[in-house]
Amino acid sequence: MTYQRKRFPLQMYLLTLCFFRALLYTSPVFSQSVPVVYEHQAVLQGDIQTFRLFLVNAFPFIPVTVNGIKGKFMFDTGNGGDIELNSNFIKLSPGKVIGNGNVASGPKFQISMQDTIAEVKFDNGLVYHDLLQIKSENLDFLQDHITPDCAGYIGYKFFKGYLFKLDYLRNQITFYKNTAERQASQDFLKGERVLAVLPFEIRRAPNDPIVKLRAGDVDITGVFDTGQYGMVQFNPEDEKKLLQNKFLTPAGTDGAGDTISTLHKVSTAGHFKFELPALNYYPHSQPIPFKKSLLITEENMITLGYRFLSQFKTVWDYENKKIYILQSH
Image (tube, rainbow, N blue to C red):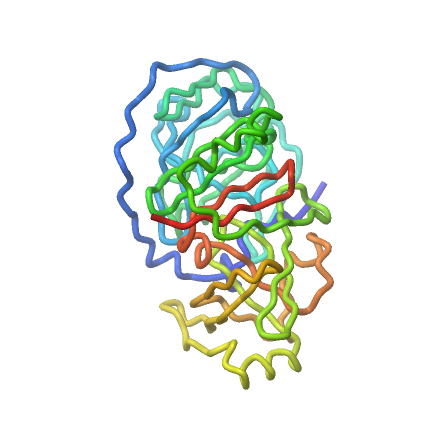
């Protein structure tokens, strides 16, 4: 079969060429735990698991060793799978070809299923042996434009059943097993200042939270996704209104020559307001490739990626369809 999977909604070549300016930020030192080994299934284990993050420009990566090869998995909530391996970086058997895919910006790849992956080891002590039914594909375009040691992806199915706290300031992500006891205690909010709680809806993909926002009197549909910067598109009438009232201001171009804009005083239903700088700007005449797959029919749309997530800590509770916005210390 042939299918198209959204990677990250940026301008048209990988939806932006800002990747050429990738910067690696330092992260805190994490003490290594005694290894805990699991077998066969690529699913998160344990009650609470913390991973360190490396930010390569806007993209969060989790360090990993696969079959003895050290690299990094992109943590992409827009990816609905569990673990997917980059066959251009890790030496793998040919596997069984199960289909073809392409990203919206053009690169195509062949998808294979690997029978057995000997070892996947994270530096927090979590280890998997003899993983079965793991997808692989040639992700050389990620190596070329983001980071040469891209080992693949971690997606939604890996952490399904958990909520997570994402902290770009401390460069870490913590997963909490979603239980009735945890919802009662809300230990994931201990010591945090909650700025807002955003209810979200799921339309098609269970990993893509969709929220309702406003700027002035213009309604906007927002989508959360860690695998991108952030983008914006409005119908011509609302765009004109936002420009006239200074809610939307052109910000020139970025280093790749792509048009960017800043959206001011974006508000939630609870009246929490925030700024969204340097969003990739899509004119109304330019189709956004992934809107149809998310069942988004509204004309006014923004995506909440790095430009938002770098300002706040967030807790993503998929089971209860809430995203907590926390003050970033």
